[in-house]
Image 1 (cartoon, rainbow, N blue to C red):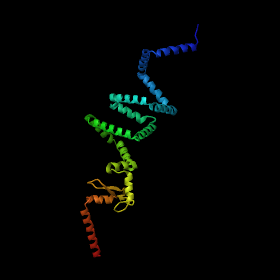
Image 2 (tube, rainbow, N blue to C red; image 1 turned 135 degrees about the vertical axis):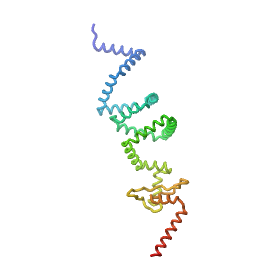
Image 3 (cartoon, one colour; image 1 turned 30 degrees about the vertical axis):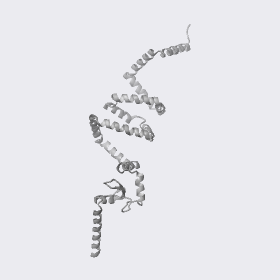
Image 4 (spheres, rainbow, N blue to C red; image 1 turned 180 degrees about the vertical axis):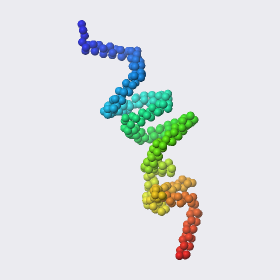
Length: 281
């Protein structure tokens, strides 16, 4: 008696379900699947299929949303961290792999969105004080371990020399440094690192002085057509902040080496010259 297609499909499903409960059968299937996928033809077919699907904006958006939801799970995060640690220990730091990853990141279709997501994620993480402290400690330990290796240190030195001597990279870095230095964030970072004050403290000091230099009162100075912003004046021996001066006044005090006697002599000298000039007229 012939059986129908529905009965045949039901028997096949039942047979498949029973086989899936057998660990040896599952392991055999997995080995066959891995062997089939590891062939160059299978890898090429998978790449072509993925490229074709990702060319569609809707498919790419769905894939990105699926990846974000999947990566948000703690167990997936833990697995990825363990795999990444093992992978980088084996072959992640080879020059060939680093070059492959660099080219991929430059040419990926969702590069702009990817960079925005990374910036937002980094901003959210850095808002946590505990994370910032862990990052600082781990960074210090990594740098200490990295620069204690002579081979790594020489390799890094050679890479930096080759990178910075490239005219395109050099111009791009100079522009980035100028933009960062002109921004409020760059000014704040420089003031903190150099003088231990914030941009708010600097602006408050200017307001306290009446909006300009503590000596001449101007809001800035010009030299060869270039505008100089007000500078922080501090005691070079103690490091104590004394005030905010314009470029000319700051240089004048610096040339006199903060010596009150020399400044007094300069004042008397100018007074004497002025008296001589007035009497001669």
